[in-house]
Length: 334
Image (cartoon, rainbow, N blue to C red; front, side):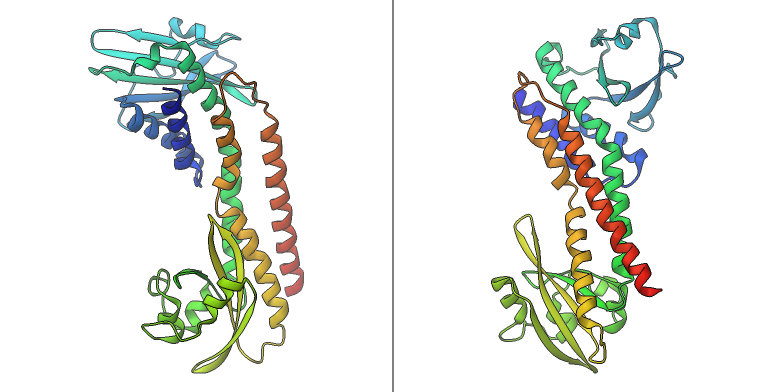
């Protein structure tokens, strides 16, 4: 059962790692718990420190309307103690599990799971299993703010990418175009929906098969930068550079420049820096993986919260790089 609960928490992490809106986070958590544990309804409540009551911050399904709002019946008093304890209420029609989630960085929360006219899993009566489940969620839920910061950084990078003053594309090893900026669509006179997901030779060379001795294959194989001259009505110089791999899959960065672009090398270097940074942030799981490692450890081990400080340091470092890059771009334009 320990393995199943660990997989449940990891699935919650996977489904929430790319959130961009705060209100989506807890809703996704509840929906995943419902899908994996078969509950008919659920709530996530947060403690109001001044009134000692619990207010709902998320519910599942959306049309679920609990009788008490805010929540604060006497029987929940035990959940707000310094050492919170779970509460199991069983009737002939339903089983309610109130699971306190207490973290030093946030107010006490209560996860309420409701099985109506259905048999709940046996582990809800196993104290050790409940402890493992609640401890895992306690460690993960405060990550909401970090994930939102990653999303904000991605949006900033997207804006920078789209406003680079030359055509740029990111192409996978199988010749599929993963992303392009706005100028790319203008240079090749095609809308986004006719570019993304297409093969690069279909868009750039307007052929149905890759050209012989394709330099993209050479770049992926050698991980060395290559240059290419193409004629697309007007001559273009293409700088093809290897990108860092993502999930073991190599990519390449293509910069399309007109021959009279005297600042081509400088722009290519800047774009490469931006794309390396974008790659770092485009996979939130690279950050969340630190928590994943903790979830797989034995519950008997004492897990330090130092990992949170480590990740904050990494995020701050990335934010500083982003700010410096933006400042250089602004000053360069000035």
